Amino acid sequence: MTTPVSTRGETIERCERNDPSTAINESALVPSTSRTSDIVIVSNRLPVHRVNTSTGDAWETSPGGLVSALTPILQKRPSSWIGWAGNAGDAPTPFKHDRITNLPVALSADEVEDFYEGFSNRTLWPLYHDAVRTPEYRRRWWKPYVQVNRRFAQAAANAAAEGGIVWVHDYHLQLVPSMLRELRPDLRLGFFLHIPFPPRELFMQLPWRESILEGLLGADVVGFQTSEGAQNFVHLTRRYTSLSGRRDALQYRGRHVRIDAFPVSIDTQKYESLATTAETQRRAERYRSRLGKSRRIILGVDRLDYTKGIDIRLRAYQDLLRSGRASPNEVALVQVCVPSRERVQEYKELKSHIERLVGEINGEFGELGKTPIHYLHRSLPIDELVALYRAADVMLVTPLRDGMNLVAKEYVATRFDNTGVLVLSEFTGSAKELKSALLVNPHDIDRLADTIRSALDQPADEQSTRMASLRRHIRRFDVYHWAEAFLLTLNDDLY
Image 1 (cartoon, rainbow, N blue to C red):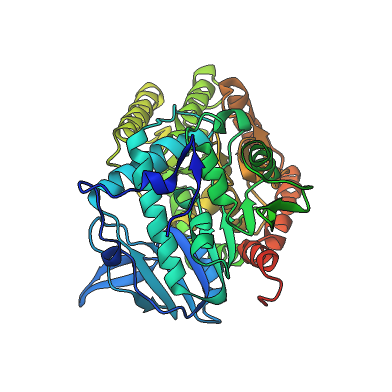
Image 2: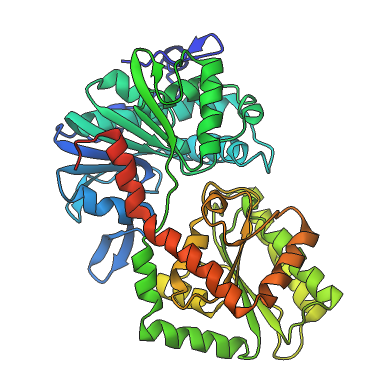
């Protein structure tokens, strides 16, 4: 059965007519399961990843707040998690891990290229991040996006118990709610977007805008990181769909739809606990000794992505050094760049650009034993990351655009002694909550440099006041609060 979602006079049904050159054997790609799960999570990736052990490959829980928040809830009742295992080709056989059924969905090599690297990450990702890079609108990427979304929807339909709950996550799967509602109208459906939802004038560029909007409106609850994102979505759906009613009583095709902000957060207690261990304290002291105990430490931790503004941040630091307002004897910048989308040429070029800039600054200002920038291009285990948070006097979180940015909240959670300064981009979802941070326009190199200098000079009593306020907020609104708030909105009887 196909979902009649229209786009420029054509329906998805018409778009998906069988083509011998691209036909996919769906029965071999969608897990065949009985409808036994009270709760089903649908996301692009599974909550686990493969690791090599002495006895062969095994599954290990992936790091991240979403997995941490949902695992305890899913373990209380029959539950499934649907996602891609990360490799092209046949999907692994469904399996249980931590009492949760994992249902891997297969992607072919062509689908990885067109659905994932193409439409998801070269069309939607830049568009939703304020077109920091120009989005690419390629018609040949749309059909794989539809096909893969239908495969995920079918997997959820196979897994969910009668009257169950299905919670779909993120921009890769925006058609799933409407497709799943067509297949299983008995379900309670939620959708949450983890990245920003763009302003109206940007989203209107998307050739398939009606299909995306109608796809999301298949959910009973559509959640965004910020109220601005929710408002943008409401305005667009009023214009391009049949959505009607007041904000607190929106109606779509005879159903009530809730559209609201649910700011995501972190496992605050986990980061606090790690920060206070003796091993973390020793490791943080070792870092400070290696970098120079008399030096102040500025830290940046980012996925290597053009939305993160890493190059602008480095230029601001360079300006501080050139103007004499900072010196390598006084301060060191540690920049961690976590590898990302390494097969994509644009990301390869970004990596080269960042590394050239680091080399340029270190060559211009470095002295024996006093390197201005310490650059790490790798993922760090959480214990090392928390120790770096503890060692850092100033945390730079300055993306050009970000749905939330949890690094800011992680840093705050580790500052149990209320020391440290958070410099935070105005264009993050976190800035709407962490108002006691030093907020800055990351596009403004001069102002960014001034703000870094102000952070280095901030008096201890002001640090304590600001950090205590930040910590109160993230303790109250942690990732468990986020998950429960969304699920309670979706179904008041869940708990």
